[in-house]
Amino acid sequence: MSIRVVVRYLGLILAIFGAFLLFPLFWSAIVARDGAYLSFVIPIVIALPGGLLLFRYSPVERRSLSRREGLALVTCTWLVGSMLGALPYMISGVLPAFADAFFETMSGFTTTGATVLVTVGKQPESILLWRNYSQWIGGMGIITFFVALFPVLGIGAARLFEAEMPGPQTERLRTRMVDTARALWILYLVLTTVLYVVLRVGANVPVFDSLMVTLATMPSGGFLHLHESMSAYVDTPFVTSVVTLFMLMTGMNYALYFALLKRRRLGVLWESREVRAYLSIFVLAAVVVILDLVTRARLPFIEALQLGTFQVASILTTTGFTIADYDLWPHASKAVLLGLMLVGGCAGSTAGGFKVIRLLVLAKFSFRNVVSSYSPRSVVPLRVGNDTVPESMISAVAGMGALLALLLLGGFLFMSALGLDTVTAFVSVLAAVGIIGPGLGGVGPAQNYAFIPAAGKIVLSLLMLVGRLEFVTVLALVSRSFWKWR
View 1 (cartoon, rainbow, N blue to C red):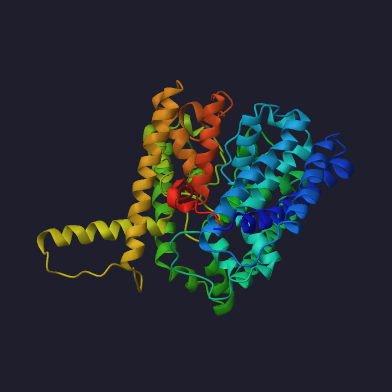
View 2: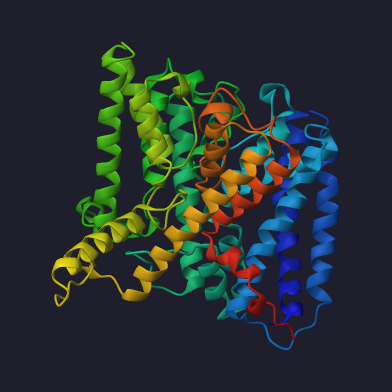
């Protein structure tokens, strides 16, 4: 593996980061005039020329990337990008401590939505915009944008794309990686625009509020500029209904939307076994929560319907919006939400979590093992829908399940050692790895992560990265055999 190749393209990506910061700089200097423009000028001055110099003066013999170089570049991009993205928080004084600023930035880029900000509504508007904008950038993927913008990478584009958007997918875009990346970003932009227009025109939500809700919904992010999160719109059912719909949409495989546009019939979505399972999980969980809120919390049915469907969609898609303090809900509702934190959305979506397709594979794999126990000579192919799942994918899914269990256990023990209670320690780790944000206990919907010690914030930040890149991309870097430099 050549470090010069990694450094060369890391420089170009840093320059792109600098360009991303121009939007909040414009907002600070021209629109909001909140005096925070220097918070963006300084990192721009560091990133743009510095990144271009690295790209220009890092000579390489080839332009394409090997698989290991792709893995290293993706992980370094997210780490260095989060350090650079932390500068506006630190320079403005909003989050002067590095651990806090790094946590907030990593939470944004990974679309986790966990926050250490105590007084959200009192911060400069441009800083809040950067906070949500970082989610939107990370939702479709920093590297995906890079691949779409710079096709000069050649075959290396496939390495990068697979490293940043790993995992089993039953539906893929059967085109070149560069074309795929561009198509995904175009669709992402179109859906973002549609949601903004619906909120601004259809619901008459103020400009900044519409922008912030849109930038948080589309990437399945969850950050908002309002301390009350989406409970501020509980008296506007149209807004919560629209956001619920778009959360469910962002939790589905984006490749299906291209198939929908091509075939022009909604049945295309239902043909996907993963989508059927995903929507079935949503409906079943929502029904249980609604009935629990009606019978035990004594809420009116309409209110329970609004709160239940919204919160279930938010947790299932790992968006992390809160419409009520669900930590005060009956135990059955909290148990359902906790279970959904282990599920996540569909592969190929902006949602985090373990993914529905993996759960399907694990369930069928377990059933096959049961059959083999009493009929060892029988050969039972593992199928999801019309597709036969290869043994390599089954092994990968089982391995990821084991890694998830080990990470949850190790993270839980570490956070417990820092003095957190049992519920808070476990759920904080689950919410970080699952890219969810709010959890239960000390990190519940009415709380935040500000009280966690600096070491805990750094560990949770790294767990967010591991969860966002789905384990293997990051964990491969701790293997001794990985680091063979030329």
